[in-house]
Image 1 (cartoon, rainbow, N blue to C red):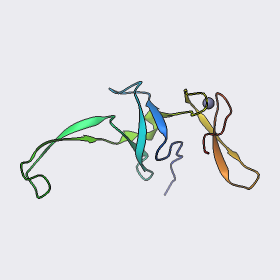
Image 2: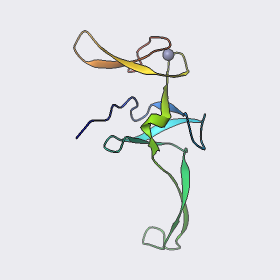
Image 3: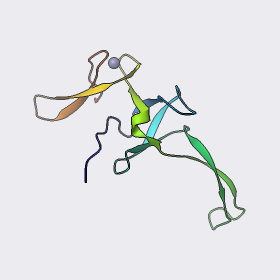
Image 4: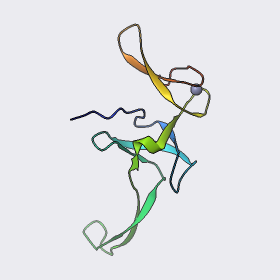
Length: 109
Ligand SMILES: [Zn+2]
């Protein structure tokens, strides 16, 4: 399976670059690498009508975050506080680290 290049991870702050929540910012709750999608807290919320079930005996409308395409979010750099493109560089110990292409600071602590 082709691996999707992921530029965001769980707990990253991201900015939505397109769609109805364009320009909004939120925290990544989940990354779905196989689908190339992310779920961002309180963003891209959709209302779902549910039938009554054990969890929700009344049924009704449930609000839930829908996955966004990972290409529609940009990482917000913790150093310069801007939505930025990221690159990956190799560290001296051989591990990879993401960095912000705006301020050149490492994004991964
Ligand atoms: Zn930066």
